[in-house]
Image: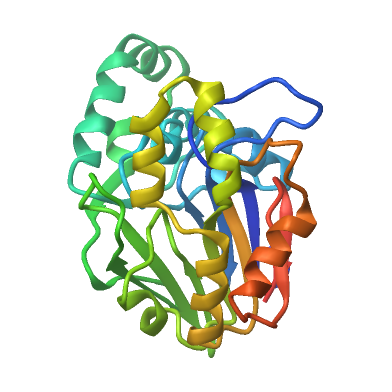
Length: 287
């Protein structure tokens, strides 16, 4: 691992994948800080994206899931299982909402034949015994090497166990918003961060998105109640005085009528004047 950095592995908001010239994948992020490598969220495609960074899957050690929407944990089981087949022999700590344990147990049951066969035939370690699940709570919930990891409950109805997370080590701080509507506590949580990775939505694309997906007013109501417009992200970043901002979990990410200039214009309208990264899959941001 070389240097402290954040890699945006998947930057699309929502679980669906559509054909196009550039296919974006759902949410996943790799945080590398103070010698630790931490995977945050496991949307579809996370395994391939991690290999694309040059990471050996057998080195997987820490995973954090911010909430139980499928685009944030659908590939958790396949990631760990694939790492196991790639030579994983050391413990993996998985942090997430209380319901994540049931999801992991169900995955193990669904793969029982394969897992038991590989243990007996190939002499592999017991996969279940390698994975240690921990429940996220507000405040500092983990010390990973020299990295303190803390959380704050965000605003993502109808899910209540949904969190923003912060990583602090060696005088540096990285904050990942998770999925959230604007709420009062985020500015204080992200205050002075070296990098804030925040979800973002452009309102004018929502009507076209819901028309394409077909869920109409119900989906539109969810998006407006549970996510943050790019202008509001700019306001938050300015208020929190973050040193750099990256937009992630973009909604919509594949609307041809919305370009990078539109995203930047919206953020700048919120009075944020600092460095801005418009997220794309595979983007690496140094700290």
